Length: 384
Image 1 (cartoon, rainbow, N blue to C red):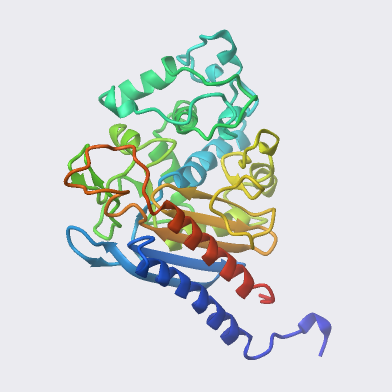
Image 2: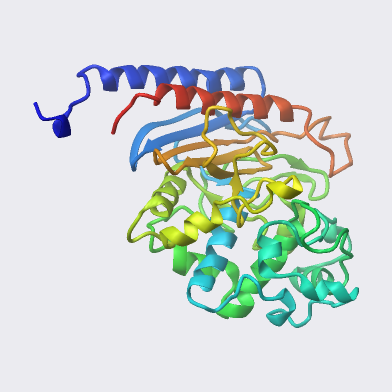
């Protein structure tokens, strides 16, 4: 037998399946231990889906609904990478946007006080080094999309000069969403649908989705209801469900389609050189873990398994979503959970605060990392 035609042992598929089943057992244990109400996991390598499972519940209150593999999740900050960053980089490839141009060259309403705000570039926003703050409760002071954008453009005070510090910033990505709209002449959801989701056959991916198979997030004391089928993030919700920092809904299968095309050497959604630039280190010198829009694995990266190699990239979302890719082995690990359902913490009937953190956060992180590590071990010797 030629070395070029070397075959796997006949029982290798069975061994891998058994190992991946053991990895999935960790997720099911996470549900039993209350780390999250339910989950959908998908593992693929070289475009071949090796695991696709669901467990637990998409809703446990006010009624129990079983999780399904086709369940649609609020991706939270994974929106930043999949929709906003991809949209910006498509426009960069078309020479419509220059990464090193100041943002106020495109968004002329962006305030220049203090004077050095003029030096904030598109690259600064994508790498979270703009000096803009992490977050602001914009929804408490503004009614509607126009009013929120007006505050972000004209009134948000920076916390540092651009390029001097790493601050993971929703505010910066709200600006990037507006940049896409200004340059393309289309709203972010329309541009992403026409240029990304529709060409890739991501039929279950959208902002403000329609349908019934949604995964519930938490009880909102502000909206006085359980959030189901609309974006959890308060600022994105107040902007009509469409923003550069949050708002995208999708399924595990659709996300795997996107990841496969991102890894494609030819015919991908972006050129391989662009993907390499996006997923290279741009921020570790400032204590950051971001390339251009995408998180990369380094010593500072939160909520990522130790088994993934250094070139791995991905993104996590506050609602309990995680997408990670090893470009060398073309391994994709997707774990979507509803870790903030039914509430982040406390009694939804009594707790009036909105911005509190959930007391199960560490449990979600440890379960997510354990699943990634178990998958990495399971596939170490699997040739495909």
